[in-house]
Length: 462
Image 1 (tube, helix red, strand yellow):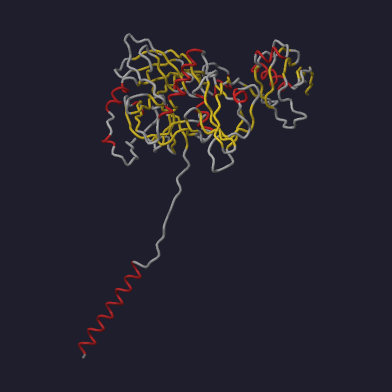
Image 2 (cartoon, rainbow, N blue to C red; image 1 turned 135 degrees about the vertical axis):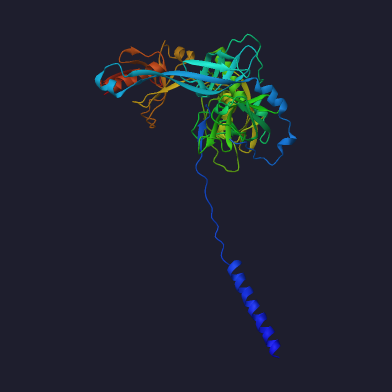
């Protein structure tokens, strides 16, 4: 019997130890820690680790053909800028000995797009350069001529005179690029020439939220670093689908997001630079707002401008643009991307949602006229068209297209300025200089205008 109670005591003690151990090890409360990622910044990449975020094995895709076709057509771009620096001694004593010149060198990438030596790169790679030098993949160097540049779209066109036909990259239709498609980024990060990285298209029509004027980037996860700016983003056939331009990063180096200007936009910009010397911006003639119905994606028209393509084609207020040609439109950045790749005078099919019914209209694109804004008056001025000059029987003048005053009774919107303090105003840029110049001088200003009824007015400001 004693032996029985002894065994029973041992069993009870063992059970107690087991239960206590469970309470300590298993039943203890679990604390979960979480953290939010730091805010990402956008960096241009004119100056990492290999990165592959996709679940598909890259070994199943053959990148060699695309790499071979692209490597020799991607060049190293070096820009030299001479700057002047004045020492504090020179500022105070005017000795003239404290001023010195120094050379600043920047680097990036470029893509040969024709056998006779035309090269496309980013504007920020060569901006303010006194001298531009191109190094080919075979180490030969050439002085480059700047043919033209467009700061807003961040594109520049260069030309070198080589003694041979150069290998070049052909343009692909960036509208046909699909999210999830494999792409290669080819460039010169950190001066490491002829570098190829792979990734997929992560998104299209990406807006960098005020970090760039461009609203329609191709986003990829191909590794792009400082020095890659102006380099090629190509598909697996070695065709150019974009110009690598920027990264989102907290450090300035690649952490998973890179952005490229779509090839359709890049090609249109360089075509304009070659033919006109400046970019011709196409518009359909509407004012828009984000769609206020979460169930519908698109761009809502809040007003249609008279005598523009949209009005002539029959687009109406409250129409929601959902497609341009065969490309779906879910937000304004996608619409702007389509228009940026088109020229004034071209015709596009625009499909709108009109009270639940899809309607397609053939719209002829107009030309966006450049405008200038006065810092003093907060007026936005625009040059007059030949038709407007003829209609008002004048040889010169500029139109006020926006004012600070929203009161329709007092607004000068659509008034035409013909003279400022007896000086003829022949273009908008000149008008802004006259307005701001007189405002800063504190003298009174007399502006001669033609109102919306065609009547002449004289306004005096003090």
